[in-house]
Each structure stands twice: as C-alpha cells, then as structure tokens.
Image 1: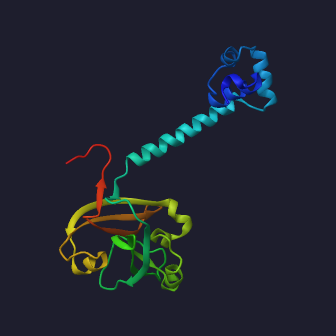
Image 2: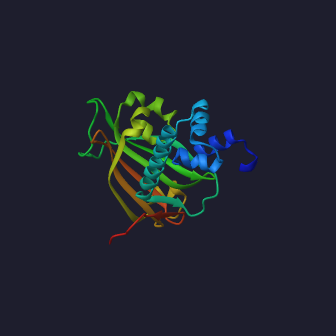
Image 3: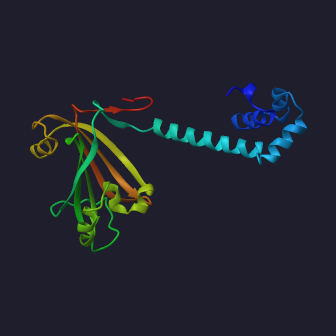
Amino acid sequence: MSLEELTKKEQIINFAQNDPFLKISDIAEHVQTTPRYVRTILSEANISLMKLREKYARNMEERLQVKDGNSQKAEVRLINQKGKMETGDVRFNQITEQEFQELRKTDPEQELYKVSQKQLVDEEPFGLQEVITYLDSEIIEEKSQKLNSLYELFGENSISKLKFKNNVMQVEMANRFLAKLLSIDSGAPIIKSQRLILVSKMPIAIENCFFDADKVQLVVPGEFVI
C-alpha cells in the first residue's frame, strides 16, 4: 500500500514510527494537517516520540558496540566454509609430569587435567582445542557427557565472565600425535594458538588450539604491526 492510500491517521503513525526524530510540525506538514491533530493521533495511539527516539538511540549504540567489538578480534576461518560444523567427543587426561605455576586452583583437592575436543566439518577434523586446568575428579564423568563447549568446564554461569590474555599464534610442524588427531601427515604445517583463560582476573586455564594450516586462514582486523 502506498503512502497516498493511507488515511491521515495511518500516515501520522507511519511517519512517527519510521522517523521518530521528525518534529510534530514536520509530520503535520507531510500529512497536510495541523500539529494539534498530530498530537491527538499520537496520544490516542499511545505513541511517544521521545520514547521512540530513546529506543532508536539504544539500538544504534548496541549495533555500533557489536560492530566495533567484532572489528577488533582476530578470527580463524575455514577456507572452505561449506559443510556441517560440529565438535567431537570430549577427552580428559590427567597431567602428572608437568607443572603450570601460573594456574590457580579454586579448591585444594583439584587435580590437573588436559581436556581436548576435535573441531570437525563434514566429520573431517580441521582443528583441536585443548584446555589445561585444575578440576574436581568427581565431576569429570558428569561433565564429559554434557559439554557443548570446553568453556562450560568453568560453569555455565561463568562463560560470559571469561577473559583471555597473552594470545600467541605461531606456525609449527605437526608431531605424530597431532598429525593423527587432525588426519594430516606428520610434519605438515599447523597453526597453534595459545592463551590464558581468566575468571575475575585469576588465571585458571591454558587454552591451546591447533588448526590444519591448509584448511584455515587467519583474519587480523585493522593495522598489522611487524
């Protein structure tokens, strides 16, 4: 329906909702009526130009925050984006021969574990995520059956509070263990990303991600400094 086919009342509401920054006098001029009639129609329809302007401003602020936030993040992308993305089974391995002094326990009884999960596309592995952290051994069996993401190890309510620090990325040659997990040749190039995971400024885990260098590309936003 064109604007000309709308009644004056419908036109007034349409102008207000689509451009809340118009003045009452502007709407009246567009509709060829009086400002008093415009105020009456908006009041009857329970429409406040002030509230519409506030809502519009909040929406724009949220969009800009998302855009700016995304523009500052490096991203690992699949070169071939086609296919079904999924994750493999979660594996828990207790670590007894290494120490990570930078990590903190939240409970004295916790033991150090390496938790890993494959990243797959069309059931073919392209990456491996592993998290090294202290865990309660009693809850491992329960967690392994319910995790959609390794970040859920730290509690579903904590995911939004996770912070990351000291992210270092480098190209390495796959050892036999990683080559087998990623279904690539030993010595083939892989991209490794390592960073600390923090909750409330306390370092609780080390995250390592390994990607088949032939299947992914690293997208770095903004200026690249060497």
